[in-house]
Image (cartoon, rainbow, N blue to C red; front, side, top):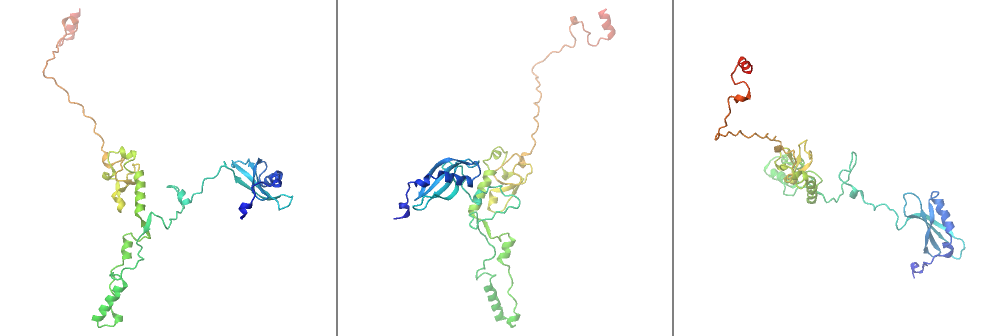
Length: 308
């Protein structure tokens, strides 16, 4: 029979009554005034009991001081086993620990920070670094160079030490380095997809800015193209007044800073005057006689005589 089945779950009487001993031990281990009321006990085994006391220390809501006491077989003296601070059922606990690689978010890195890349990062795949040896039938392989040297030896009268060396045709590693391909790892298909999705979400056709734009970036003169397969769908904005200046934008993105949207609208032209030639409007050259005004063309003396 195992020890687990023989262990008694009934608290030992002498250990259960040793509340004062357990409190004294908890007060000695804790700061003054932070040990609260007795919160129960539990049997840990034969003649082993743990007493719980409330913790009044700030920041430890729901925690309890756990004091374990025990006594030897047939002994009357209860001794102290250990004192620890344990969380209770409703204790305030810290969130589950998450590795830093999963906690990191875009924008968290600062000057001097280093971000090691996992060797099994799904966003990357092995690239061509020039370390692979060329095939046996390659024109730059050592086997082909030796074969050329052997053929020259058959048709040349000179000694093998004076034979010309096979001409160097350039190595694949040198060509790869010139093209910028000599990297240990490059973006995988998964890495390309997640980058494209991220850029499309930030500066894509579904953003409010693109929805209100007069045209898309594919026709904008400020769009700087990028190379590779991503260049088929993305470019870099080079308009200092645009909201996406220096950012990778989708070709379907757009904003009010489009190069062809900078034409100033022309002011509205007034409507031409309307001349009605179907009717005649009479205008009297002289006012009526009873108006008392001076007729047109009369001099000032005549006007004074008329009023005298």
